[in-house]
Length: 599
Image 1: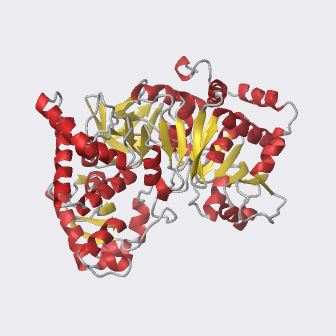
Image 2: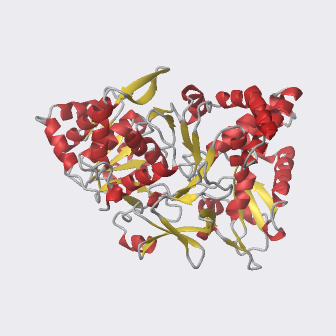
Image 3: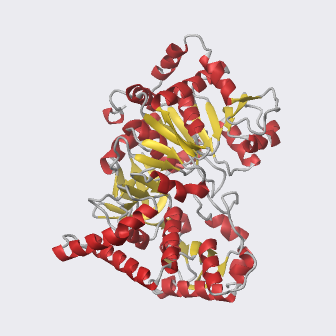
């Protein structure tokens, strides 16, 4: 192993974690709300809790290199179980709580999981519904007893029982240390399953070496400081949140606050006021929409002041060397409006904000930077341990995804595909050698994304498989068109259609809250979401937005017709990924009749 992947002599994350816990001791590592009050937990708590879980699993028969799956929302127990498994020599595998019972059975069997940890009664029910299909499981462990006080099953136990078992192990401290010391950098730290939009999900094997390289390289581009407050709300089953809320805090000593639920993220943001915040584009779009909705409700003077402040911020950010008059103008409006706005949305202390996992409209990044939120776009994949490139304050270009990580090679293939090489490239797909060979060729990861390099900065033009080739032979990347549409507060998502067709069309998912508010103010009658989508005024509203977007593109790239998806989608629906992106193939398949009506 290269020295560049060893941090202070630690060649595994478990060794780095042990060192961090011993060094930071009683300092706060995590905070979680209980009965409306934020409760703190220390690094000592983390180490002791994970040791009890790890030793308990060893007592139940966990062998080195075996997988343990975790089915839970973000919470302390998730992290304690994660590091307990890894320190004990196992491989951690997160499963989304939105997965069905059948999907759970597939993931448990495909990963050959020895144990399954579930959050509560709801997730336990999924296991019970398909338990006969998972004969390889040794035991199921439940975090919460609520609703299960009288429940008894020989294959199911509760987390407190597992931890009691682990604490009763004779000479447990020494045995746990030996397990950690036995770890090697080339061993698998975690499995991260891909979304499976083009087939069955595949388990990407991420090694300790991959993780440590990402931490070392990432800190050179990302301003991460000990004691930084951050908010954990994306699923920990996703590579982005795992790196941001588990791996990096271990390395740098940041404090992780768990959001109460996905619905309370904005409230929790205001309570925490984090120094660093990473989110997917959908959240930044919703935050922008909420602010613009408040602007519309303000008085005429309030709207004028808001617009003046944003204009001053935009001019200030755009100027390479702002003159005295611009600095004074910006300082005035920042003190009068923008500072209060940042506090209102929980960004009063923000020093670094990043977006990734999906394309985002450059106009949205520009707008947030104008109000004083330093938002920068990055790019990564599960197969690259989450990060390939990122924009930084010292080097950025709107529309690009920034410069590659240090000690990482990025080049563009003959067909325009982005190829990546570095020590953060995954070890392959779990028990899928053919698909591994397809992704990794001659040491280069074939990302499946098309793009270009300009002055060392990478720009994504779209997924190769999503490129539309019209009946006239024109190649069109739909991502740019879709991002511009989603910049509107009234549009939640969009899928451009047109492969092998004469012209482009689009399926659009409206933002329910903003469109409902807009319709109520204009006394547009509707009774439910479906009738809202079918209202003539709403159709005209979206039609006007589509026409505005069309003006930015060549005629062949313009949308001729559109249709609204009149069904509310949630993360439970197959059309959405865990990060709330529409799955193009599923959408095109499910709404085929709607698409055909436009041709």
